[in-house]
Length: 335
Image 1: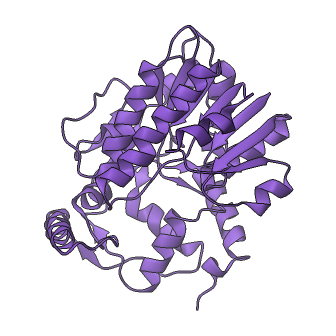
Image 2 (image 1 turned 180 degrees about the horizontal axis):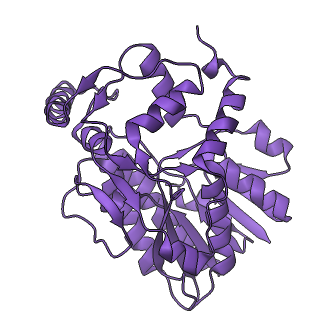
């Protein structure tokens, strides 16, 4: 099969690309920057922006399926930038699939599309979208997810996956950020630390995407639906954070701030940053305060039933692999 992966040079994108290559597929990646590593693997790399409809159509030409992984992540920035990447970019991908008779579209969404600021305890896909969001990222991802689901039909089968907090070797965002903030003394436990959170080891997230593609057909159980993806191992968030830090031989977080105080500080910083026009990310936002102090774990029944998803790499094994990986990089070396 000829397959397009948008954001193929990202953390999850690369994991998906490598699995597709191992399966014997011809892979093309659409990405904003060059990737000698992917090119060395034989990937046809197209440099461009998913908000550019012409580039997206060119990249999708001749493909049988599209994995739409590219997105603008983060918790701060201009709404227009998030909308351009996450909403307009997704609409371009859908249009390219429809105009070129591509039969399958697998979209990488996020559980945050249904986050209402409160505990999520064993929820399933029946939970509705909230009426209000605390950040542009979940709002624009929700708009995009709805577009993908609406595009499902006789000619194009679509599915949306919601992997939660992806981590593992090669992570260039979550783990390095935790390590940097912990080493600089900027990391605080938010809340009482008892909130249970489930995460997703990167190989499990990538496998879920390939399973979704294999099960996705017009009229199949997976068509037009969204699925939570995780390791199925909810545990206290701050215990896990400290275990991730230990992989890089970083001391555990001991300083704390209440959930209420963190939310108040986040709101104040958002106001200050907005009024002063600052574009760098505040140390705390309301969204982050709520994410770090509430429970987030999900039922995987639907993914198991419709996609055949079974998380094969446990948290324990993932931590072992991450430790070995960090030993070989500057991220894991104490300066």
